[in-house]
Length: 118
Image 1: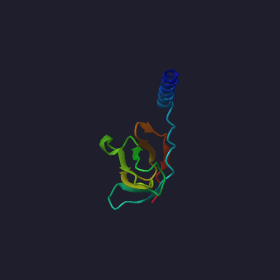
Image 2: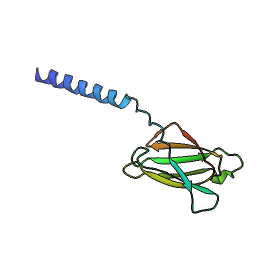
Image 3: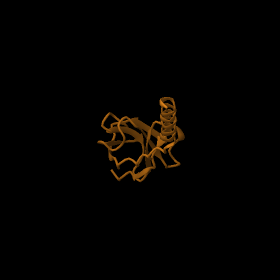
Image 4: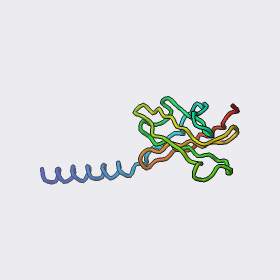
């Protein structure tokens, strides 16, 4: 009798474990809108956010302006343990920037911002 109960418990545990692995991962929310300020480097803007993403997430910034060379359209940073981050990226007033976060194998939707006039 104990053997049958033990087998049932093992099967139940295995079913629960498989179900837990098959559960979908919650999507990451888009980052909060970062602050935009002048950068110390010419042709760049400084973006910063306090707690705007998942702790330790990778923040990716994409400049949609096709006039920006391809090797300068993408920038990024890694957030600290509180989700705060900052980055300098190539951009001019009026450019649209898409900001996303990645954590593990999950990527958020974009927060799109427009670089304000100086």
